[in-house]
Image (cartoon, rainbow, N blue to C red; front, side, top):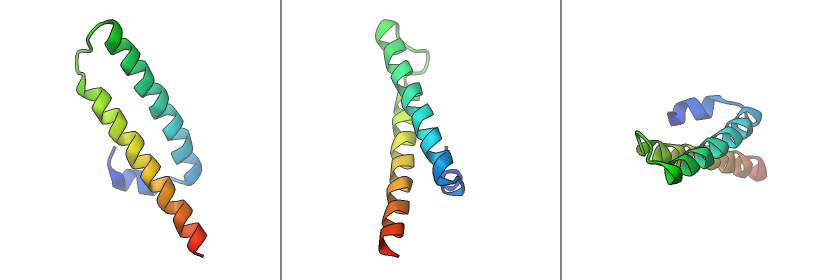
Amino acid sequence: MKYSEITALTTEELQERLAVEKTNSQNLRFAHSISPLENPLKIKESRKNIAKINTELRNRKLQIAQQ
């Protein structure tokens, strides 16, 4: 997920996407601990997506607080 795609989403959509990404990340980690994943870089990608979404949510909160 590109950062430009994240900025285009509304705050509610970002919160929903964050919940989905967290669940996905947890499922990937569980699956990887049981048997190795075909592509373990998906775990890293999921963590980065979570960080990008959290960053955008934080930026929006700061913008609202400054107004």
